[in-house]
Amino acid sequence: MSNSKRRLLIASALFAAAIGLVLLGQAGMLAPVQDLAQRAVTGVQRSISTAFFTLRDFLTAPRNLQELIQTNSQLEERVAQLEAEVVTLRDQAAEVDQLKALLGAAREAPENRYLAAQVIGRDTSPFLHYLILDQGSIAGVRRGMPVVNEKGLVGRITEVSASASKLQLITDPDSVINARIQESRAEGILVGRATGELEMIYVSQDIKVTVGEIVVTSGLGGGFPPEILIGRVVSVHRRDYELYQTAIIEPRSDFSRLEMVLIITNFEPVLIDPLLERAR
Amino acid sequence: MIWAIAVPLLAVLSLLQTTILRHLPLLDGNLDLLLLAVLCWSLLRPEEGMIWAVLAGSFSDIFTGGPFGVTSIAYLFAAFCISFLHGRLRTHNPIVVMAIALSGTILAHLTAVALLVVFGRSLEIGYLLLYVTLPTAFLNTVGAVPVYLTLRLLHRIGVPVLTEDTE
Picture 1 (cartoon, each protein chain N blue to C red):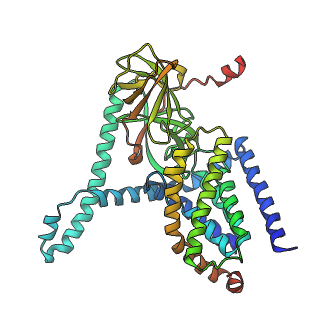
Picture 2 (cartoon, helix red, strand yellow):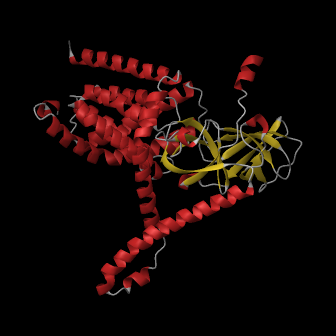
Picture 3 (cartoon, one colour):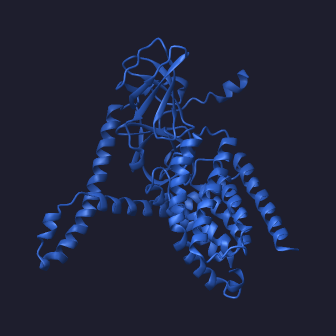
């Protein structure tokens, strides 16, 4: 058999195998394998992420260069030791600050029960906006649970394994949230955009929406609790000949630097998909 | 031999991809070490490169919220196209390696985007190609030569007899 024929044969077999993987994945039959793999790597993932965050904080932390220049050469070794300690402490202090801020946010809504989770990975696909958290079904995490931080809504849990879970950010192009503009009470649907902004669609033309207004979850649809902060309006697109106006929303959270989040564990999302299917 | 190298290497690269490289973006793109490993191994051993593609894609798909298998197909398509160049190009030429990384990245991304659209994901294709694919292709082009040289070294250690034939 010639080389190119053999190559074509191997490629065909591999394409068939890959399509098989897709079908098995869609049928949910790969979930146990994914669960096992995710469980195996969660610890390593957490260690690498923590080390990376520490290094990033160290490299990006502001330093007094003048002070460093004036340091006596005899004390350099001691300074290096102290600096290492300072980095560790600063990292711990930053973590405490984050937890304090999260605790503050949690106290604002005492009716919710929260579970703190560390971000241990990002989606390997650059086209999707998901994060991997270090808490899974063992800790009580379930699919559909909303996730917040001290600034507001972050997203929702879409997949859960024993020791980790996948969080769909509100900026993911597939994310859909029922939202309300707080001052004008206009309601609409927030969808994620690849740019990292959110687009609020289906906003009634009768209501005047102004830039700077705060956007919160409306609680409609049962996917999220009401009144969770999302962001603010940065622009409004209104044309007289259209049925609805749209608004661009800037999320309050910086999703590129998320390290800790809170999962709302006592919120039961209402799954309306079966109702929709029945209606069809 | 392929498993002894491929499985641990690709597992480590997928961990690095999700924990570190995705935090170091250029616009919205990132250096994709998994894809680079697949493309470079495809230059060295085209048939194994395709197996690497399915493996690398599967490792990558553990850490994605997208449908399982999409990355495997995207990587496999790129490796498959590149396998036809085997023996026709001087693969130890850095320009060739960089050109392969550039075109392979674009091919893999176009395939992934097409598959995600088929699966009903609403994507802003223009934005993604401009802000994700092009920066990733640039970073992969820059990173291609060191990755290729490292893998060629591994290849020589692992398959010393066939090394001269494959270049």
